[in-house]
Image (cartoon, rainbow, N blue to C red; front, side, top):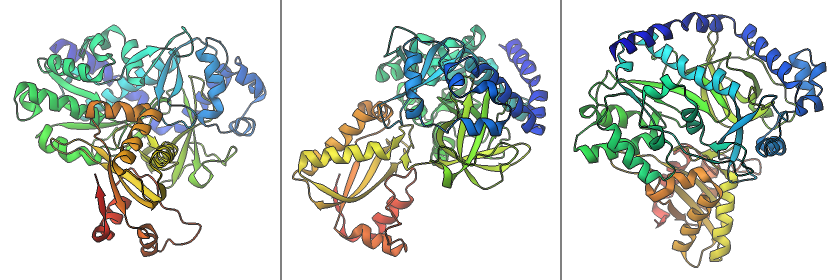
Length: 512
């Protein structure tokens, strides 16, 4: 593998001049992407409806095309999934990446064109390794295998046309031969749909390989690594994989897991942690400087045209959207994208904050709505409201206020959600209420259901019942009384949760 390591490192270094040009000329790069997208989009039904042939400027594009949520584009996407062509994008679409977070269905499906595979996802994978090699020129990462922890694929639910699955599974299935050669486990194992059996087979196979890198979400990675330690009887993963170099992570915030990985899993200062911002809709950013933890460089030549909407206008159909040359440091923007997969002025749902310009580095600062995504479950307020409503209906309860947040994984412990609920009318069976709350979340959110499967990542939620008046007193202590102030329903941190629990500890009635 030494020759392969040398060859691949040489090839990756050749990408650096292009990346350096992109850092210095972001407006020029984005203007080029915009023109290419409009030219392609002219040949689609969406483009004809919005008169792409008459569009000459970005401002003209923004005036003709409203910012869209998934629900707005879904009628077009459904037609694409049923086999229609030239609806959103002129080339055939055979793949659809699946995720949750939509309010009108259990899952949402994002078209993945061949262009978005080649020019976005695959290019992103090569560029992130180019940055890694630039930061670690002595690396021997390609002398071993890379573990890919992905999802699964299934048939298109709308027709026999194409396949759907997690974006990681779509990417793995379409990797070129050389990409398959340097990864593990075999594709038939990596794409297994039954998670418990999949983790078992992955642990058996990868524990016997010379693994030098992992690409995955921290939560699922921990599940795999814990199983490997159980099988091997080793104390940490470096005893299993002594040549391990880099963990490439994304999808959820890594900071709550950093100490666990660096102290327990990979107890060495030589291990690199490289962050990416990759979603079902596209590959957006990658950490280019290892000293800048949590900061990633926006990749501007991946067939994605970016717009940045001030958060106070995030829900407007025609907001004052900024382009890459107009953004400012330390301001929060809602991310809007147009892509070479046929998404047009699509509201991703994330908010970002730029930490530097030239190059344009950013941090993912949150979501445009309250949510919990500590483990990749993407539970949104609509999911929570549905679950609360059904649990109340089944148990005769009425809820006056609630909030929820994550309990992060620790060494040997699972993650879970923790709820603080104030009832105006108590349930006739608290245990049944908790059960229905959990079951409903699993029914309405496929990602939460996957994490709850056999308690592999998430255990059942903890529910704390607090005395009446608790939330009112808490809001008063924060100076937030009044109609314009609302209790934050969901949070991806424990800030609100711990504050309420600490202030109400002497009055709490636990119902775990």
